Image (cartoon, rainbow, N blue to C red):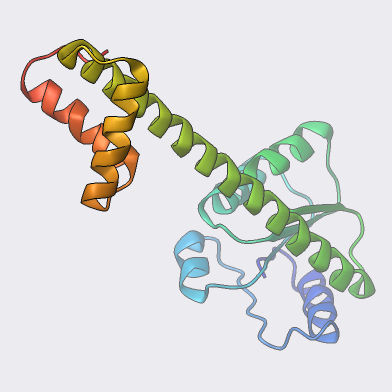
Length: 190
């Protein structure tokens, strides 16, 4: 837990312990914060900013961008721009004027759940981007084979697929090898 105010920190700490979190580390020093959080490797990061100013919020948002963990942030005042910046920075729960120990557990559960859902979406997006990139590579390799060998698109794809099976590699890897070879030979990739 990262805090600016000892009284508020004790409320959150008590709420965490009541919720069954026995291993709670309170961090008051913000210098080297990302490194410290990475060393601690917490399940959840709780940030308490009593009256955040833009500079303090931006510093905390730098932390949230660097640490891939569920983050719950408690603040006493906010505005639409701060909320939007928190969401952009990856804060899972942004709680305005709601610091009570009995609320800590449900807020953390929601933060963890929301983080997990967002993480699944991020992973799915990355897999989709990779698949699209691989598909482009395959299309370019087919173009090279079609041009160089006078093949139809179907024949070029069959050759790529057969080569991948024979080598025990993915078709995208074989296609990438063809692009590299074409580049080395000074051929224009399609």
